[in-house]
Amino acid sequence: MNLQKSRDGICRLEQADGKTLAWHEDSGVTLLEEDGLYFKDLERSGSLLPYEDWRLSDRERAQDLDNILACREAMGDAPVIVCMRLNNPMVMSEFEPAADAIVAEFGVSKSAVLDILFGECDPSGRLPVQMPRDMDTVEAHAEDVAFDLVPYTDSQGNTYDYGFGLQFM
Image (cartoon, rainbow, N blue to C red; front, side, top):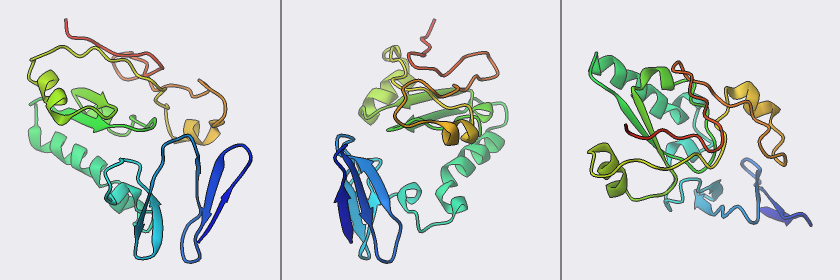
């Protein structure tokens, strides 16, 4: 393992038998070790989740997407609500058409999400980041330039830009 830190706060971890990881020192990223390899704990769960494990295939890492699409098929005309915990922007265009509603949360308790879903309180949050239109947008994104993503617009005309959020009527 070779950990380097640049003057501008970028940390790079080069692993002998694995991938090179990079992050900014102020990002709050912590690392997990498994089998002598290191992984970013993106979920901050303290355990390695499939989408964090760069050793897995893209298909294995995308299992959540498969679950959403299978749920839509199984539910037929019944509503499908996708609840997602986010730490960073994500591409929603692959699953949003299969969802009747999306609830995004950035680290609140599960009971708070359930209170919203069961109508105990109204949602009031706004997106603290832009949600990219597609992977081409992500790849063209300059990480050090704020608000340079082309935000995703859903079939209802909602644009998932910084500050966007719907409320119950």
